[in-house]
Image 1 (cartoon, helix red, strand yellow):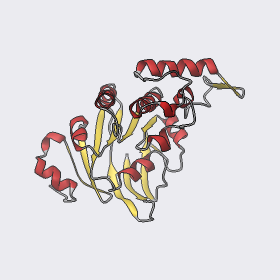
Image 2 (tube, one colour):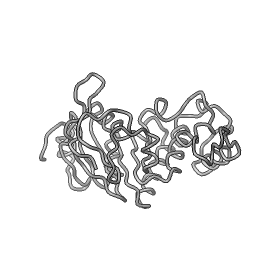
Image 3 (cartoon, one colour):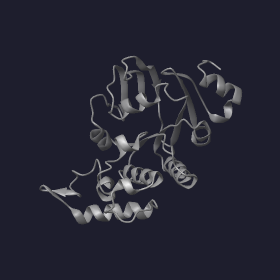
Length: 246
């Protein structure tokens, strides 16, 4: 649940203005809009990467303001980030090391100051197999992977955390057709499993095809929320352009 959320952008101006919405289990809520209208700042605030100026973000009844990404993960939030190199991967690390980011202090991977290498390798190998990640091996540097395979690794890692809520920001950007469809199919399957998914994408067709409801964002506010089949192309254009109440 997001209540009256206000978030500042990098310039100090408000990028998100008094935004309120609710996300339900078994639903994909898509956020559509021209880039630069507050989508990035909204996602970062929800995922503990940007301070909240006012308002609330509630995750299963708990306010998330001040919680770290690791604490949010423990509450059941997964994040497929918009910038995979900034937030999703450490490029100097191997595939195996990136496969446990955010989980590296868990007892299954780390005990009494030592890394449980066998467990890490087994986990990474399972991700590579199940998500069809093309790599020369789990000891390869993650920067050697294609963009699509890097995104598959991030998605696999986040989703093996067994999240209840998934925030997917530009999840198919820069991917080839096959990798993009893999990610889309994965999001649909997770919805069928009852996960709540917030999808932010600059690809309007993608948002309309995947979402149960679509929120149109303009200058930090929602101009409307509707089911994709309820709106004409003309209405979609007006909402994207900032007209409310269409």
